[in-house]
Length: 355
Image (cartoon, rainbow, N blue to C red; front, side):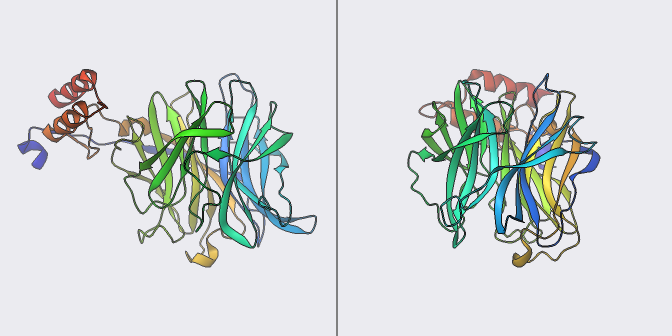
């Protein structure tokens, strides 16, 4: 009714889950695996997954970065060739190494960014860097990266799951930073980052998440729990997005909910219009802080159609309605110093409003 009185048009995102699979099966009691980062480019014969696994290897229980590969569609069929690619050193700042994100730079090198900690100070976190040649098997550690305005360690577990991308010839990382925020920074050499910005996310109760960039749009998938408490384990996966690099976001939408735990999701865009969400899952366990990472964890993958339908022409305040309030939002940004919108965006709003 309000939309009708204001001359607006109500719009709804139509996102449909079309498939659900287990990518990597559960691995046993007191063992866990999570934070998948899957890579696939047009022309590749496979999907490559980097992920965290907590197991006892050679007498040491630790988080390590593992690699696996799927020679089908990244959904059906076995993920094979599982191997450790990053193993920390006991007692050092990279003792626990986890939450990888990988991007291919302009130098054709594979650049991995991953979260580390010393096991006796597991909430004092660092962001480490390693490089490899294709296809990302043999890695050379480069140590902690430098980010303008950030001092190591980040305390109180206030950082997670980096998402790196190549943007205008530079490596850009997005890192969940404190509750309800994203840290963004750029690097020319892959190791020293500047132009640091902090983005306020629309959902202040969001858990661990990842960014995806596609067609000048930014997507953010993240965990959430039924109590809306960012410090509790999550059992829901949600998504939001931004047209303008995080200045504003569209309305968040729940993708799915599980009976146990679901966390550390990643969105992977496909060429055929079906998008995949990879995530860690534990079935039917109590959602308590002691079981945050769960036991016997699997990595699941769900496929969706219509993800991009959350972006509606002219809905600049993300409330699902194209109305005069969106014109006001455009005007505010158009008159800002410097302006963050142009007359092009006004034309987009006008088309959406008059439909």
